[in-house]
Image (tube, rainbow, N blue to C red; front, side):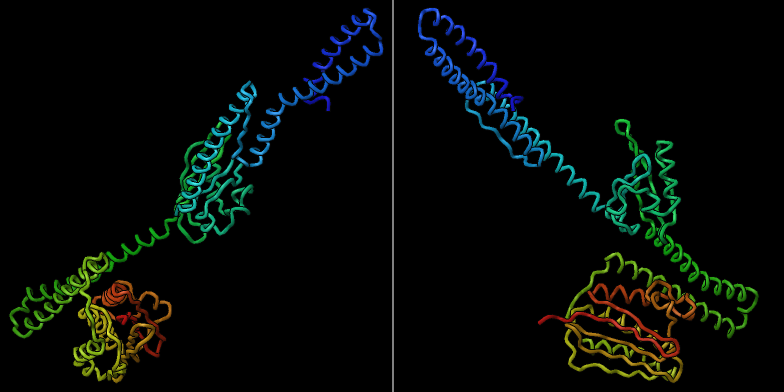
Amino acid sequence: MFGSIKWRIAIPYSLLILVGMSILGFYLADTGIDRSIVVLAMGLATLFSILVALFIARAITRPIKAVTQAAKRITSGEMDQKIHVATGDESAELAHAFNEMTEGFREMMGALSTERNRLAAVLSTMADGVLMADAEGNVLMVNPAAERLFGFEEKAAIGHPLIEAVPDHEISDTLQSCLKSRQQQAAQIESRGRLLRVIASPILDNGASGALLIFQDLTEVRRFQTMRQEFVGNISHELRTPLASMKAVLETLNEGAIDDRQIAKDFLTMMGGEVDRMTQLVRELAELSRIETGQNELEIAPVDLNSLIDQAITKLKPQSERKQIDILRQSDPALPVIPAEEERIEQVLTNLLHNAIKFTPPGGRIIISAKSEDDGVLVAVEDTGAGIPAEDLPHVFERFYKADKARSSEGTGLGLAIAKHIIQAHDGNIWARSEEGRGSTFSFRLPAIKG
């Protein structure tokens, strides 16, 4: 109690007054005044002096208490503290200085909070995984991308060794190499079925050390590289075959077959077919490129789908008749009108029918149906062909799918890829289902014009 500032001010002040009153009392006692009156006066004066001293001490310490209480509230997170002192003395200066300090501290905390939120936003939206580890290799921080990449939660990983959160020795070795050498380390590894590039950078801050790890998922990049290599290989194969055939024909003609008019005519017809095949390949490649890059803008207009189905059947009727394949049409005569480019949708129908005829044995049957469904139109081309193996079905709309074992060597292998992009360009979707030995069904859905 007596250790407070108030009492340390009041007690010396009271003692000083008491000493003064004692001296005055002894002086008055020598003058003949009754001692009891002097003692009473001294007691009252001493009590009054103590009360005055306490009042003065309280007035002096009140601003200090206010500063103390405000500081405690700031510590608990209440940053909007302000002290009001109207004495005009040093206490007011103390309060004013405290208020300025509080304002500066609040601005600094606001700036730090803003920067922290920005950093958190950057880390949370990054596609690359980010992980921070201390000098012992314990996890300090991870971002959501790293959590998704390795399948753990930040709370479970914080404070634990990296090898526990990410059980991959190559990643752990990269971190340890960075911590030991204090130099950036990089590695490309396979982890959890994905190709990752790991970059570990040292963190040196006031003697404390650690490392920042960045994980770049290169799986899609590798897939695109593989697709590009396959694409180039397929193009080479598609061009090499007709070129080799024409070269053989030319060599045969040069060796004397040209003198036989019938043989020469047959060979020239064969060369013409190979030229047509390469021309079709180049044309379809150019068309696919324009569609994929958005250079081929659609000319949308109301389209009668039943009319397009009839045109596709009529166009391919000679081929179906040569193979003795029946094409049955089962479409709703009251189909809603669809917004589309007529030529493109007819191209899709023709392509699907052509494929069905090509892979249906003689005497088979093809059913093309169309019906209204969910504010759109559903079209299906069903055949009784050999079907497509289950492992190959997801790839039927890829370029050059015909090179797969389930396809023959006829055509360019680009028709279904073009059909897919045309349907998607019309805000529709296309898919296939098949069962080996039971045939295949290719379907697509297009939105109808809303009334």
